[in-house]
Amino acid sequence: MIELRDVTLAYGDHVVLDRVSFKAEFHERVAILGSSGEGKTTILRLILGLLRPDSGKILIDGQDITEHSESQLRDFRMNFSIVFQEGALFDSMNVRENVAFCMREYTNYSEDEIEKRVRSLLNRLGIEDAIYLMPEELSGGMQRRVAIARSLAGCEPKMMLYDEPTSGLDPLTADNICKLIKELSKGDPPGRAGFIIVTHKVTDASKVAERFMYLRNGNIIFDGDINALKNTSDTELRSFISELYAA
Ligand SMILES: Nc1ncnc2c1ncn2[C@@H]1O[C@H](COP(=O)(O)OP(=O)(O)OP(=O)(O)O)[C@@H](O)[C@H]1O
Ligand SMILES: [Mg+2]
Image (cartoon, rainbow, N blue to C red; front, side, top):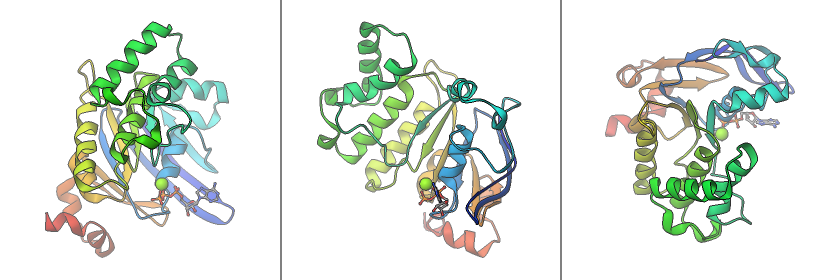
């Protein structure tokens, strides 16, 4: 389980998160919604221990990681796989090397095992034919798939973290990525691994998540399921999610 307890973080005098608290089980399917600059990526970076809060606690399975050393944090990060905003592939490496990268960094797999695992992951994500292509030769949707394959390669995560996984994609490709995110949360072997997706694409979030939080002015001002979300009386949130009413 993840718990943020009264987490505050500022860059200089710009307070991004102001005593944010929430709990989420690893198997939950959570969407954190919010406009650009509200602190969505910041929350993911805090969960991974890539940033430390100014005050408050971040508990992973009951242990406060804000007190941990860098080497302890590495172990905690293995609970999660993150797909960074924009995919962030290594431009100078082909698909195979991009996906193999974390296995080389973090595991003792032999070259044969790496080859097998890369192929199996690419196959699962439907992009095996792209194995020797360079990132610049891939469409946006394929790049996102490679980024997901890469994030899954180094560990068996208890929870996936997706930062704007469908931004910049056309609606059909975005829909395919949503299906993939749902499919992956069933686990392989089966057994559910949840996720936190941070996004401002409300329709995409509604396709994959069961629980929605809305971040505004440094606080989570909404936390609930899709029905509660659609029925919110908060005028600004209603306008933020207006595309859900049209659907
Ligand atoms: N390293 C940094 N130094 C100073 N300010 C930063 C830094 N990183 C983020 N910020 C600021 O913190 C705020 C939150 O940033 P964050 O990236 O978490 O937003 P976001 O909700 O993910 O936005 P987007 O939807 O555009 O990705 C922004 O106002 C941003 O300018
Ligand atoms: Mg962001």
